[in-house]
Image 1: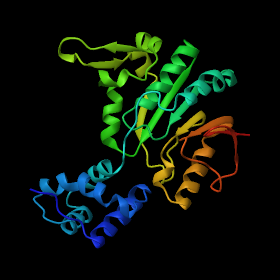
Image 2: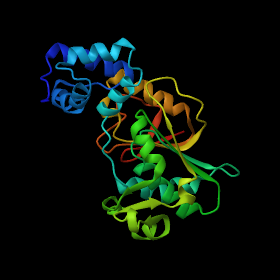
Image 3: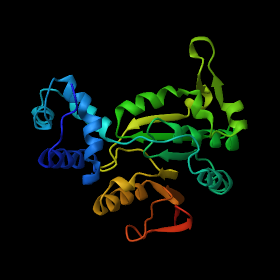
Image 4: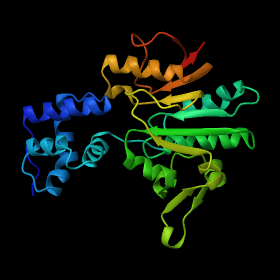
Length: 268
């Protein structure tokens, strides 16, 4: 079956729905993306138009379908040690400010397939050794979190991982696992993942020394950005750091955090 053409009215229905579900604001330029991501679901149910798919979503007769649609419509492009200056800052500056007697906690708040969370974990394992630390990863997509929990990736994704981290914290697959690698178990066991929608009230996740919220706000409108940053600020300890994407800024959004480096903010 060929992909159905989406009308303006159908796009508006789905745009409003994903905004309510995930806080994601889709521009008209995303019509092609919506078509390409959801075509397989129309084919799966032998539907010929997006109106019928929207009715199916709203019917409640297919309770797993809304989560599948959210998974497909949330973009999950990431790789290990993306924006390396952030990891340098984490290693050289943030880790100098350990709170005595407390584990150093970092939240990867849009962790996707887990590359960011495990990149953070490798830095902490290298710099802190046996001292207490933990990494918490969250995402709105259950599909990507299932993959993240495995810590198992194609070998091509090692290209941005520093060599000494590769040697220390990554296991190269052999035999049936050739062409893949696995994050070492002592790193994986201190890294946990949970499904969280940042646009909803947060569960009790505790306080963090550093929060990564990178390349997420570009999908939110201004009121949603303000609400999400306000929520995350409450989870950041005094003196803690918030990292956002290099194409993002808190200017005009939130002024309670101090800019200390490109795309890095500190809580006073």
